Amino acid sequence: MTDAPSLAERIPSLAERIAACRLCAADFARSATAHAPRPVAWFDSAAAPRLLIVGQAPGMRVHRAGRPFADASGDRLRDWLGIGPEAFYDRARVAIVPMAFCFPGYDAAGSDLPPPPRCAATWRAEVMAALGPVPLTVLVGGHAHRWHLGAAGARGGVGATVARWRGHAPAVFPLPHPSWRNTGWLKRNPWFAAEVLPALRGRVQEALA
Image (spheres, one colour):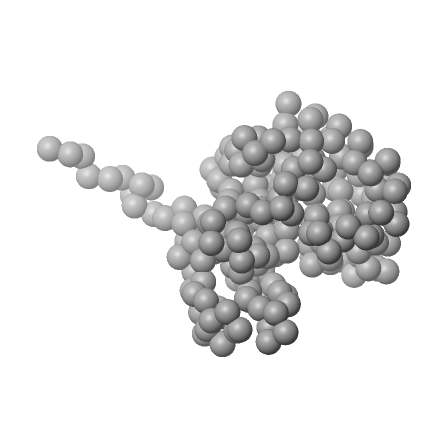
């Protein structure tokens, strides 16, 4: 006879509760993509992660894969961090918590819609409390900068915030989004590759050691 599951085993984990969230279903149905919610919650609240990656929101490829940064942007981000997929997707050491867990859809012009504020308002405080202190936090893009650094810390936009990276290191590194759309910015700002990335890679290695 199989033992009945314990109370702890019957209670869904935080990541499982997020994965079941359908709060934005009506909004997504009205978007140009008319898609259903598929929250991508890639963390283990029972672990003590060493690296927290805060993204924006899943894109269409991530929505289809059910895996964060499963696209060209993810390839670039992993190169910036100096780690491969095995370490990147190790939920015991790395938590990937975007500002919105679902793909928001496209607008009528085919551009990504912004992360719905409802997602962060509903889940973010509980997720941050569950993860506890994390030695290294990497903030990817303006939405992550504004939430974690506040209006003053993110003043001047993404480029200005990244340029002030030394004021947040070694615990926090604000980065631009690794999208191909930012390739021009990266070329115009060679200091990012020359100064920020070596320091970032060193901190990632220390945090994950």
